[in-house]
Length: 258
Image 1 (cartoon, rainbow, N blue to C red):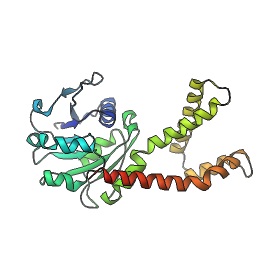
Image 2: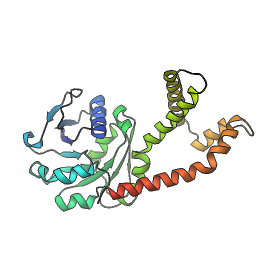
Image 3: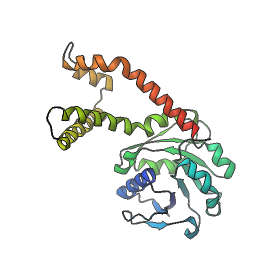
Image 4: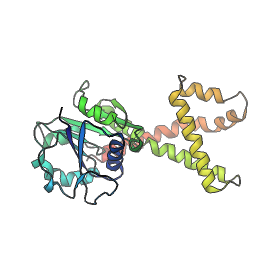
């Protein structure tokens, strides 16, 4: 069986993370080429500084650029997109309707991965027109770099604010813990390593455990103990803060589509 030709447009933070993850896995059913104005020396793939040097038509084209840039460049790619090309957008806020206006005959998939795809531990949201629509090849492609979840487009922006931006929330927690550790006369580098180990170890236990996050939290928390004292400060306001944060992020995602 011939390999699926994949053309990735943009190789910045997200595009680069995706390509790195696919290169790490080998992704044997796919052949990758990238379009990036700045050549990447860390990828041994066929690269183009513009689409003008790309030959033929890809089976899948992935737009991994900022939404503002997408508005300016999308017409440049019309010559290489055939009716059989599946279009995948990683651009925040850009709806399926936006692409359908330009490419009415093509299958359109919105995808929102997060940065851990670079180490094959990502979470990717996928959606197509129609609540039950699926695209098996696109799902196989993104499953190479982590877990995939099909959702409705109605939920996409809100969930993007959670899963796409989610690593930043974990990194912020790690950053805060590291700063607290340094206050205990611990070297800054060692403090950051300690905070990283704390967060990654807890996440790994949660990943392998049959217990829910709530049950794991309760297992650490003795009544009237040290952990309980800390959680009594954190828990009353944390849910409200996250609700507000996710709501504002989802609102911003929708604004980017305009």
